[in-house]
Image (cartoon, rainbow, N blue to C red; front, side):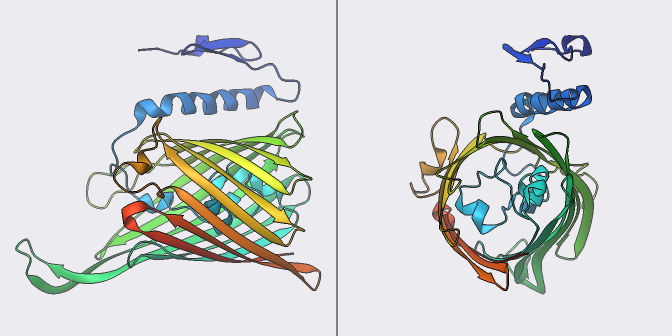
Length: 342
């Protein structure tokens, strides 16, 4: 077991951890932010060691992705994050907004599960941005049965809501930071629980033209308790890169996820805009060194496709986005969103 102490980290110098040397000398990086960067790096390296089994966390609705654009790009969006959906993917990306973006999403998810998502983000000058979003989910209701399988005359169902407030701030030409604060409430057959959580994000504009890097530590919080013992929230450390080419009309992105309740996964995706009006998107999600999506549930599982259109209306823009995903034996999912830019 490797032990790291405060003496192992010397800011503005090299330090060594788990066979990796890190250099924190950077002319554009304040000392205080160097400390935060080390925290993010440590979370990324250490998170697999704290990971648990699938189904060991509560409020799993936090893991449901939002935004057909980001979904169709294989959920590789942490370094892209340039619209209102950055509230979910990386709050630091809100500062990339060109103005104000409003979006409303409707999802045909799994079986009777439906959810709606609403988000809005706007710039506050050139240094900051804010955003507000909400996710509503319902499973519908089913007849309640007892241990013998006999109807009790009642019904069972689940509903979920989270309200998120996010902010982003420019530290320097190279770095933006962001925070999303979440209020989460969930009802299971009449029993209700609520909690708070937060996301911490960083967006880095690298010295390489058109290349950005991002990190988002998602769902930091005390857990959710229905009766006596709280369930941990689905913590995830999300790292990513994105690169734009062909006059920024084509974007390719790659993400890695280090969750506390599942295997490490990798996502790749891209989008191509034609005359800033029509767009096509693609993506794929891999789990582990061998693609476990293909084991027993079909090779298409993990595939993402999508398209969209954006038109000018009275000097503003209206957009329509769609994404299709395949989850193997759970079937296909369809995601729709209406966007307004001004």
